[in-house]
Amino acid sequence: MERQTLTTRVFVCVAVLCVSFVSHGASQTTTPPPPTPCSAYRSCDTCVPHAKCLWCFTNNNCTEYPVSWLLPPASVCQLSQARWGVCWMNFEALIIAMAVLGGTILISIVVCCCCCCCCKKRNSRPDRDDERFARRREEIKQRAEERKGERRARHDEIRKKYGLVGDSDHPYSKFENE
Image 1: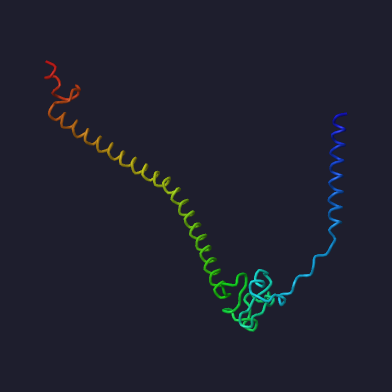
Image 2: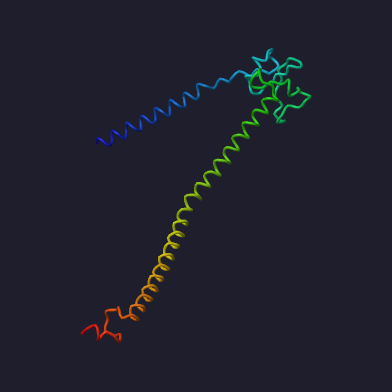
């Protein structure tokens, strides 16, 4: 019973929300006012805040930005006299500043990627270096053991020669036991 009322309440809430969204959407059917044409703006300060407009100081007028061109052609306005976005910076300086900023960001990304790759290589190198040093250490240890064995054999031969060995298989052992 309790579960049925909870389900009913949820269903009613969903229905009320749907109706309110539909009625809210239906009440906003008014059309927005038509956009103001760029030629209506009479100063640089009122023209450039609109992204679609370009102010030209050569003839002091606001024109639509030629979106078919990346840069406005000279027939519309000279780059040194054109203003877009802000009045205090000409279009030429804006292009140079954006190119420098974009180049800096691109170089930063490349440097960061190279540094990351180098760091990964450095982290993997100690493993290889450790293996190489361990192998070299083992080789040195084996050679030292071989030399130690050879020295021991030479010393044993000298001891046998002069009768200093304590084992009984050499010919002078019978004189030592008496």
